[in-house]
Length: 306
Image 1 (cartoon, helix red, strand yellow):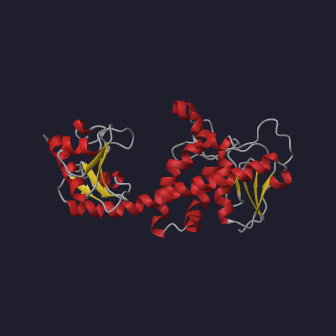
Image 2 (tube, one colour):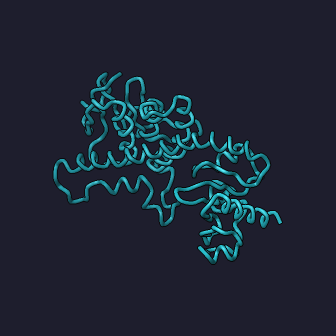
Image 3 (cartoon, one colour):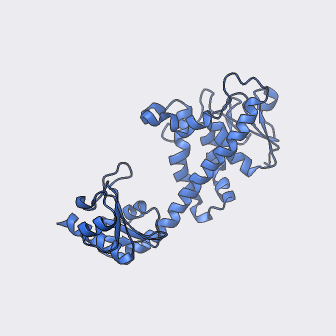
C-alpha cells in the first residue's frame, strides 16, 4: 500500500507519534500528514496509515494505535507505543531507505529498538518514570520534544500543527543520528576484531582511528586487553577500557601520578618525551607521536600488572 495520507491525532503532540511520523514521512514522502481526531480520518481505508489514534491495532488495515483495551505488547509483556508499532512494521524498510547495508539491517533494527524505541514506548505508556533519571529527567528525548509544543496561551488555530512540523525536523535529526551511530558500531566492530586478532596476547590494542571498541572487545572475550591506542587529527590517544557498559570503572587506570598533568611536567613525571596530557580521571591521555603513546601505555600496563 502506498498511502496518500498519514493520519495521527490533532492537538498537543508527544514523542511517539512525532517519531512515528519521522519513519513514515521518509517512506511515503508524497503522503500528506493529517492531524485529526474526526472519525472520517481515523477510520481505516486503503488510502491511509493511521497511528496513535483510532483505537485499533491492525497492520493489514494500516492502523497502529495502542490506547485501546487489549493493546499489543512485546514478547516480554512490555507495552508498545505507536512508535514501537510503526518501527516493528516499517523499521527495516526505513533503514534500507537510509542506506543501511542489507547485511546490517537486522542488527541495527534490533539495537535501535532496544536503545531508542523501547524507552519511548515505556515512557509514553507510563511504564517508565522519567524521574529515575534524577536531575536529567527534563533532558530525556521525550521531555525535550514536548518542550517544542506551543505554550498554553498560544491561541492561533494553526499553532499546534506548525509546532508539530517544526518539531518533526528536529526529531528526524535524532532518529537519523541514532541509526547512523548503531550502523557505525557494526562497521567499527569489524575493524576492532581484526586489530584484536593482530594484537594477539598483548595488552595494548592499536586502532587506525578513534571508534567504538568495547563491544567488540567483549565479543572477542579479549580480557587481556587493558588500553587502546589510536591516532587523532594532530596527536595520539591512550584510552582505558571500561569494565561494563554502565559506569566508569576501568580494567586499569593510567598511573595516578599523571593525573591532570600536561606538557613538560607530564613528560618529567612519566619519563616519556612527547607526552602531552593526562586527564585527572586517569581514563585518557595524549601524546605527540605513536611511539610516545605506546610508551605511556606500556608504563600503565606494567603498573597495572605489578
